[in-house]
Image (cartoon, rainbow, N blue to C red; front, side, top):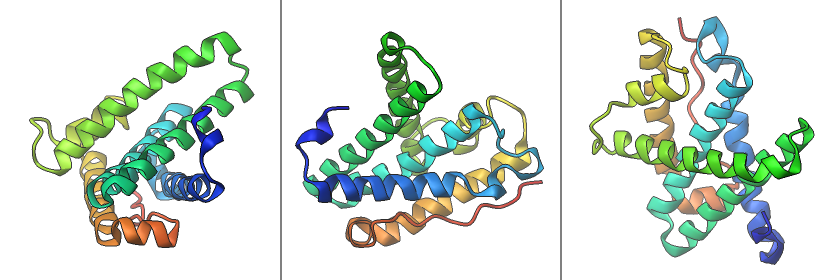
Length: 181
């Protein structure tokens, strides 16, 4: 939370822009139509974490040390945002730190699982990971398939954009959400 105090406005501003682009992608209506992704606080939180994980994955993969530093800044911005949102919802100051730590651990686990599945290194399929996390364990094979295709396409788009594109555009590009059936 206080890590951003010592960073330049340019670094923090770029990280905020990248994070915000992930939030916009997570909020695409198509994700929530036809009872696809649950339109709940948890469902939307999972989608924000998914999109942010994709941005961070690309920054780490294509940006060298500068990309890794920017990826950390994006992570910090996301959790500063979560912290502020919890406080706005009335979560007590003493509980916020514990909840943030729990969320950060969950984010790292999800980001790792998504990355392994996208790289073909994990034992668990992307569909299964998305079903467990984003779909809250609900059995929706069509939604799982469509969402997995969306995630793969978005990862490809971000990869084509690369670190330099993310840095110069100040925005992550994602696939269009599909209204799952």
